Image 1 (cartoon, each protein chain N blue to C red):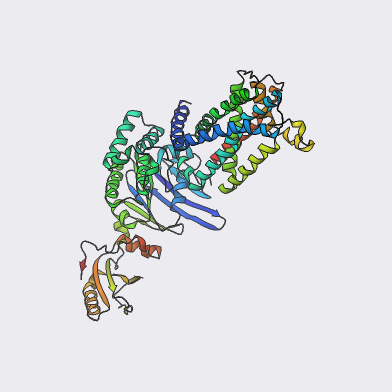
Image 2: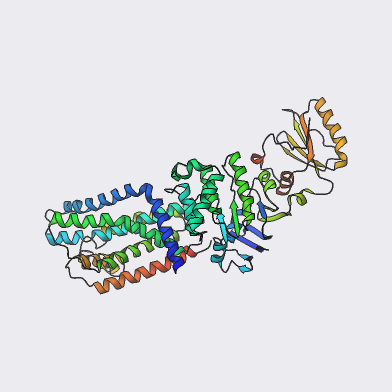
Length: 245
Length: 321
């Protein structure tokens, strides 16, 4: 255990240093996406009530974390696969999930400033109050971990790295437009709503709404469903990174 | 024996064997060379030792431990300089070397000391604190080498360590490889650079198309009864290849170069033949000397890795015309 912790700290340092050249740019982009997101959505509607604004703004954390976990991470991992980087990393005496955990930690830290900023801008711009519960910490961690594990599974599970890139394009489109994150699930056709009662995306949005505002959501169900998906992602990632060719 | 490989088979695509019944063993404290042309299956073999690739059949044991069943043991015991790029973007040379040293279990103080020593001895100070993005291919290889040897494993695997490295630093690098033996490591050197390998290794295996085609010390591989003299002719441009006399045992023709092998007692007639060819204007120059490992390699592998042969390499004890 201490050995794993030591490896985790060292890999964390390695990953942090390796992100340094793109860190500033990535942070700027994340912040711009967050701000653009909150302001941009205002253009969809002629008038936004504080309740609508609250709904939309509290969807932002899910969108931001999933964009990192399911889009950015698979793309960068796929690129590293193409370059053969993992042939080196996997030869080190570091448990592979420890490496994944260190990598994921850095990505969450990169995503956090934009996430917080989106909430603050939204609350000020549309004039609503946030009611932050301590449960927001496990909620954000769970959403992040689930996104990362599923992202890692896509990146390592795709037969060819380019396929992972293509998959992320489809995923981002599906999340942005066809997921009940920015609008209530009742607005989807029944069959799509049925799918989203199984997928984790809606419940991720519920997690952020339930822990950031006074909105009435079933937090227990949300933790349960996202937790189950997190476990599935973990098992898939574990199996895939341990796989030998 | 530190590492024993027995009857190893691997095919990525069904029916195409990348490793075809490979058996070899590494003795404690030796530098063992794995030589072969591109695509011979060398890196696949390394990847099976380190646990990235699973063999279809065969056994690999390290210190008696079955490392196909326990790849984690192999990763603790082996340190690798992979052929692929190391992920060091964003890190300085020193940071990269120190981080791997710590990951491999070294304590901060001794790792820092060892990293400084390596950087100093490989004359890399100028780059030590610069970010890796600005490094040339050769400098990246040197950093990768330092990462493999900063806290060396029981077995240090070096896959083409000198690619892109300048000739002076190559010498310094080979000194560091020798020093690893004094530190208690055993070295597996993977290369297609025969000239370097001949000077560096204690024993070697020549691999071609997935099979071991020769194994032994460089000396034992070169001893081959009646064919221990290398007799090289360089033809004049546009000259026809002359008829080869019977005392020549074998000939490999690469462009204008004829590398012949013959018995020592046939040296006198060979010289006579060469002189007459020179007088006739067929031969530009010729040299005679002991067989090199490269000759053995070319004969075993069956085709010349010509880009690896320096054009003017003449053996010290050969007699040039």
